[in-house]
Image 1 (cartoon, rainbow, N blue to C red):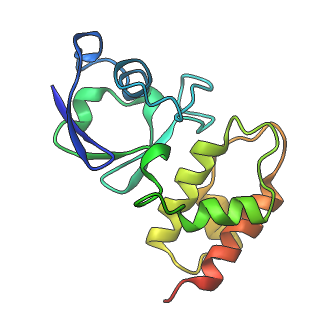
Image 2 (cartoon, rainbow, N blue to C red):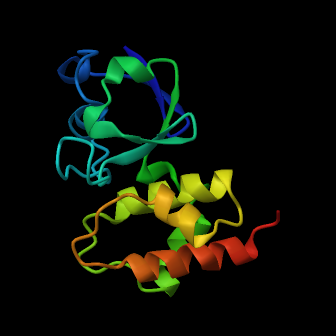
Length: 154
């Protein structure tokens, strides 16, 4: 099976070729893209969030066969040409990460939100960022999203 991951067409190795295998394990074990994290395995925590055709998807519950022919972006592909994405810069400026485990999924969810809605309200942020953070950095996450939104054009 072939996938387009982070802008590159990739042929999956045999270990990751079962279309029923969750996308998370294809990325981590098959393609060695370990930035996407395993959290709960049931799509509840969001640590495994990636973009599929620009939409945030919980990769732990998404069969790899469901994304064949679609564009998958992981945290490793969020930056463009070695330039950090605006949400990555805002995350650093607002000192969002604590333990950091949930952060790749949070960043992917925030980037998807801002791509769809350049001026999200607090309610929009709450609706889009359903990822769980055991460290409770939600106020900092919100501040970082607001920081990026201030710099975006409508």
